[in-house]
Image 1 (cartoon, rainbow, N blue to C red):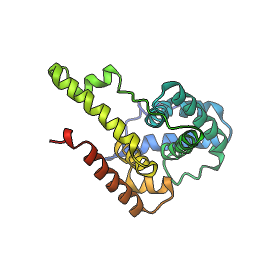
Image 2 (tube, rainbow, N blue to C red):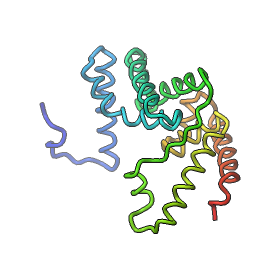
Image 3 (cartoon, helix red, strand yellow):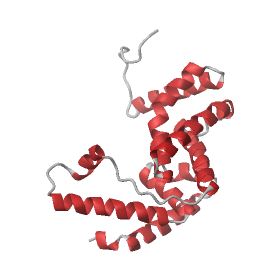
Length: 203
């Protein structure tokens, strides 16, 4: 087998991304044909993406882990029908979103607020910040989390997908099966509501 790392070829700008995408799609093709080992690689490389996504919805680690596992179980069954019209990660988050919606509709809404772990906070806040500044950041993160939880479901979905997951607007529109203008409108209304609720932190 020839290692891509060892081959000395000229890679154009963006070429590394193209290689990674081609590799993922090759694994998808193998998995769609029933190759469980290829699918295991996809799970390993995308698990944290799906887990973090579910954490943004359920705010509970055990439940997020369960939903992440359900996501990949569903993906394994559905992957023969994946038409490769979008990125695999986008398709995967579509499955995750449907499971999150179903979970939310099965019972009362959860209101737990989980701050990022200490390591993540250290990166966000910086080691040189004074304790009172760190406290202010923690309070702001808590307020933001609560404000996100209060958004209507459709507005929260686009906010999480665009602002937190970094997905392109058109990809979100395709994922939610709504017009691009609808995504922009929901995002704008969500931003306005968040600004209103967080105005004391926006100076």
